[in-house]
Length: 126
Length: 126
DNA sequence: GTAGCACCTGGAGTATACTCCAAGTCAAGA
DNA sequence: TCTTGACTTGGAGTATACTCCAGGTGCTAC
Image (cartoon, rainbow over all chains, first blue to last red; front, side):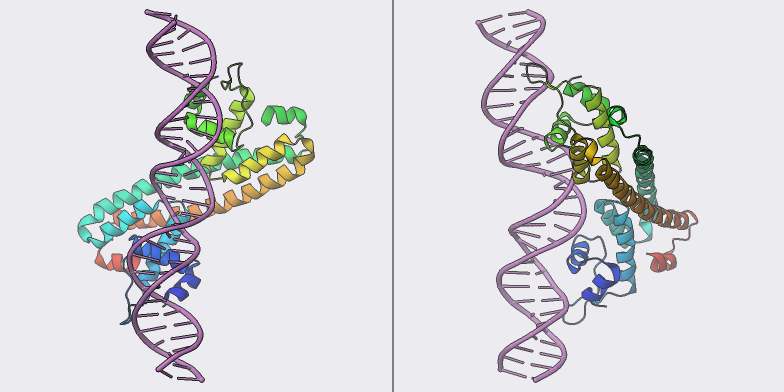
């Protein structure tokens, strides 16, 4: 699979795919004899995983560390697990904050829908 | 309330509070005769609202627009409501993506906990 | 063999959201 | 009165995550 195809498949620009490889967010992609990237199944799985984690706001730094540990083999299994647990906790914390904001947005929208967003309500609720 | 007090109260740096006011994320804060900010209840409510929305990832641009509409008075109530609805949809979409990532993280963590993250599992699941 | 196109690399540029800093003002205490 | 310390402004600097670009390579079709 060429970089153009992978780009289409995953909705990430070719520049982004090259960037992800350059910084180690995904392991080196196999090349053909001309040096052109030929994304195999493993590369595609990495792309998909990273797209998913990035969409959730997981920092590139943590993901790069995960890839590095992964590439060091089975000796890093505990470290990888710890990293995943840490990121899960961060994710949960962010989701809780978002739930609070969502509740607040819903409350404000309800005020607008009830036609209660009069001057008085504005002054009280902004 | 001075900027130092507001900073402590809301866990945002004085620089950030000044920045938020400068870009219009919060309306102008009242000043004393020396030109020093004196955060009143309304200013504090704005800070708290914006801290909440920013924590949820709502973009500054959208929040600035909301403040601008708010300051234009009741004629903008419909526009404000539309803006809140749009931001709620974006928030919901982000939360769904995060839920997917969370499920995936939990799945991977489970593999590690089951001691199944052997070479074979690694090759299959990365 | 040469035009065209997709790809390559290394490095510079951009967007967002802060964060820091220099130079100056002001009020209170020694 | 002078120092200290918190505050002011405008502007520059930083971190993160891309995004773009110049200059070059290599396959394919004419």
